[in-house]
Amino acid sequence: MQLDKDQLLQAYRKMSEIRAFEERLHEENATGDIPGFIHLYTGEEAIAVGVCQNLLPTDYIGSTHRGHGHSIAKGCDIHGMMAEVFGKDAGVCRGKGGSMHIADLSKGMLGANGIVGGAPSLAIGAALTAKTLKNGGVAVSFTGDGGSNQGLVFEAMNMATVLQLPVIFIFENNGYGEGTGFDYAVGGRDITKRSSGFGMPSIRVDGTDFFAVYEAVSEAVDRARTGGGPTSIECMAYRWHGHFEGDPGLYRAKGEVAGLRKNHDPLKIFRDKVKDQIKASELDKIDAEVTAQVDDAVKQARAAAYPPAENLLADVYVSY
Image (cartoon, rainbow, N blue to C red):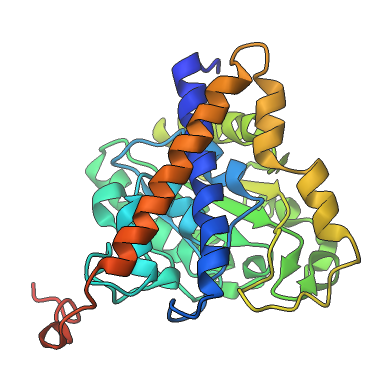
């Protein structure tokens, strides 16, 4: 599918927003003012954007503990997200979710969560709803290579095939499940073979290349919307930062991260692929605008109030 210039600029802006948001959090976390754990998405921007660029606002995604990139790609407000990470009442979850539990149902973001492999079961629920209502909706789950080992993921894929649900399972293989290498932890060393065993189309793509991800997901979305059932896509990428902020990263080879930044940068790869269509100055302008946007988000988040004590039990229980 050919993307026009406006669509390309939109894709780059989203990747730039993710990069700027994450790199700024890397700096802000060092101040000690952010509560809880932070898991950064830097290096995987092309996956989230390549997926969500194919989705409608009414489609749903389920995320992981490393969910900032997914949230931004699906349209969640950056100012609201930054406030949420800082635990402020102005956050998208009123400061109660923090970094690992950002959710915004109005944007189709079912939520990040700390349950490894937790998103597929949520996504098939959304997909079953779409199929039942016959509204043409699609659901997507994001799962890491470590999460691909979870039994709940297998059950979700099996159910998706049995019921022919409009769902796409995205496996973000960034090389490590926490500090354990993919080659050691995943039997067979091929997530696509596991997925295909459940009877669904399964492919592996370069997760640092927006266009490779976009094209694969475009085909999967078309299949899902037309009753063709689920698809599994394994996206090979690289996590630049530690599993969490504060991770010493002793499992990495010397010079590994420097090599990733130089040779496997999704934004640089995108820039190179569109150099005949878009001037570098136009992309530089987007980077500058995004940096200012994130700076303002941090400023507002720091100035915002914490949730009042009387809201302690608000939004905890739901009455039907």
